[in-house]
Length: 317
Image 1 (cartoon, rainbow, N blue to C red):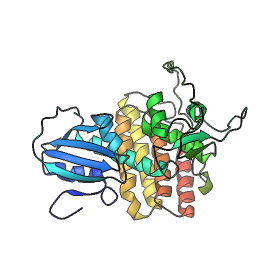
Image 2: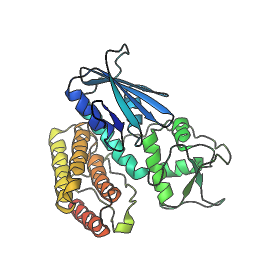
Image 3: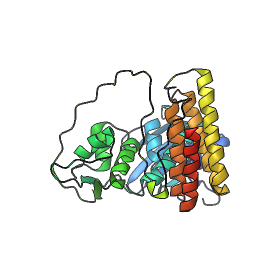
Image 4: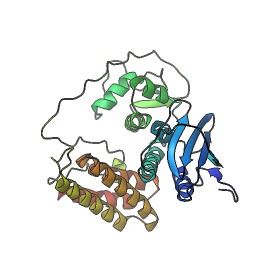
């Protein structure tokens, strides 16, 4: 970030950290963000985020879209503006969510480096993929090379980050390759999915394990919390929060100290999601996120293997 002005690259200083710095001073104005041909504006009034807009959306959706622009540049223009407020959430929860999405995208972008690439199935006619979940199976049918990653998210109505996570698993499994040129036939889009009927008890779905090469074993929900599901029982929530803290403490006992802040951010995000009623999914996803982030940060293979073994032991108790 240059001296005397608030501007810089998101590679040098993450945008959420800069927004937090400016918000603490109570400034009113607009962040102008660019990433190649993409443009965004993020408005602050009295230090609080009140509006954001990109080419395709506004409000929180626009703000979370910018979280995926890891190579962008920004500058802050102080002054009053006339835009109507579209964001009411407090800054801490917004910036925490931006950090979470940025951390996830750093991992995903190793295999899905651009939303403008075109996913193409590697399966032969009549061949079926094994070891994929239902969401990935539906996505695989659409991966004909006709739609880009961003277009697939648009035509299916899925959040870009969620679709990219499923695509990441397909690329890791060798079921999809990404090409820079549109090709193939236009796939027939599926009908909208009906809402699933309630099931009792709620069980935690098995998540893909993209880092098995480091000795990661499937993480299983602890018996005491497996059937918690989405509820607002304060006692149940307190137990889940405590378990998320044990995950963070275990990880910090194994990972180098420079990674402890990231672990704390992931645990704080998991606690927030638990308070919002996400249940055991948030706890399991915390363990997976810690493992993924350690790999993305370049930790040694033996450290990752040790981390995964300890996390698995926690869930087995």
